[in-house]
Image (cartoon, rainbow, N blue to C red; front, side, top):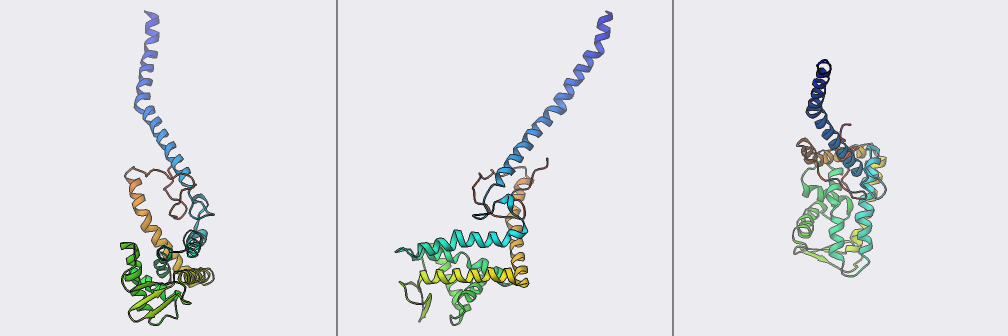
Length: 253
């Protein structure tokens, strides 16, 4: 009896400890496992490429322009220029190079409508075309919308073999030499990047463009995390849309 009396408090303490373990420690263990998973997701996401040379874990505000310039040049314009040397590639070349008009216009001007940004970029890239803004708006409808919405040019756009000029206006038609067009767009893009590097006002405009785009792109992703449903992480070597510092919100340790 004396032994039982001595052991009774010990048994009670053991039951209390097991109850504490079930109530507190098991959930904490599951939480630790989930946190570890999130950290692994984060680490793998940070291996994704923002450009050919910069991964997400290397990214900060100072690398905005290098990322923008590198990915646009290497993954779009250089591909278009190589493609333009082959036969029957005019439509594909124009699809590629017209993708950069709206971001260029958004950086350069305060205009917020897509077609106006496209036209602004056209005037910048082809300053010698008469009545450039109206031609740019026409190209937005007949070239850009045709390619992106119908997978072909709309009536009034003529794709030509080499003609000595990137663009010729003939009556109501716009004749485009895709190879020359791509070359002039590529040269104009490099000119814009140089202006961003060397002109404080253009640097400010570029930063405003980037921050607005970043904010808009991150909102849906942040909403997923708020709901507790993070998206599947990208594998290493995936291509990612950049944001300031991280692609995913970094989980708390």
